[in-house]
Amino acid sequence: MAMGEVFTPRRVIPVMAPGLISLVLGGLGGIGIMWSWAGASFPVKLEVTQHFYLMIAGFFAALIGNELLNVLSMEWSGRQAGGITLALYAALLWALLAGTVAGAAWLSSAAYLAMLLVLIIYSRTYLKPSKMGFRPSAYNYLIVASLAASIALYITAWIGGGDLGVAMLIFPVSMIYAVMARDIALVTGRRPARERLGVLAFLLLVASFAMWTFGIVEAAGALLAASGAASILFSGIAQYARREKLFSYVKIWSAYLWLMAAGLILFLGAPALWRDIAAHALALGFIFNIVFGVDVILIDMIATQMQKRIVVKPRRGVPMLEVVTFLLLNVGMLARAGYAYAYTPSLAVVSGPLVGIAIVAFLLYTQRRLMQLSA
Image (cartoon, rainbow, N blue to C red):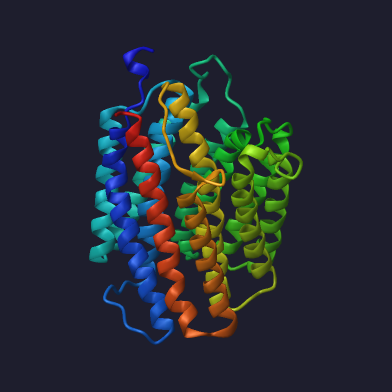
């Protein structure tokens, strides 16, 4: 293997460092918001706007940026993004982090848009033939479409007075749709056969978020549920179940259940607190169950390509940390929904820490495995 084709895990650090800080600050701020619901005090206090900027434009943008500029780029083109691109993206993340903490919304917005522009410019890489000579597929075009939709909806919401938090959330959710158009085959062992169905699911998702951003909530919920159903049919997880990947199936089905639940909540015109549940069902329940289910397989594939062996200690066939993080994430989300239903203060108190521990533990676990590739 040529030197230019060797994956360098340490190159993810400049992008992930501000992202992880955003995760910690935004997560602690989110816990503080939930504790205030229960009448409890928490040392970290953030406004809701600061919370979603840190989590979506900070953490998710770092996570997705790392995937597009490093991991997925290595898979498709045989190389990671150049040092200048990575440095620019990292600098924008630091600027967004500083602006959000300082309450400078203009800086956070400018940095977020600039980051999306960096990604959409780099995404031209995915419109070229792969290192193996494969032509771009729906997966490649949906990556670009996700970035374009994210930019367009954010600008439209900013100008038209829409819900910026919802407008920003389309970025990570639609990118999951795009990447799953290809990565689901790592779980099912079969490439999705009906690409048009995947494109339809994506378009329904974009339409749903556009309506939700501007307050057309019930229709948005119906479209979101329809999008989830189309995505399930496209992915093939309803037909195929590989025994050796069974736990990943459980995670991915859990993700789609959270997405469908979000659609149902919106469709029923639920009050504001339940709309918060819907947003977090997507941001946490859908996205992280997908990440938990696919990333472990993706890292194994990279390790195989690099002829590295990563040893984990399984218990009954599944690494215990994966089981624990999955349970913590979903129990924490159920506690959040339980509070919205019963207004039990203890549920609001435990929900955030459970989810936060799950996410941080999983990220540290995957980063450690990536670092083992360069050992």
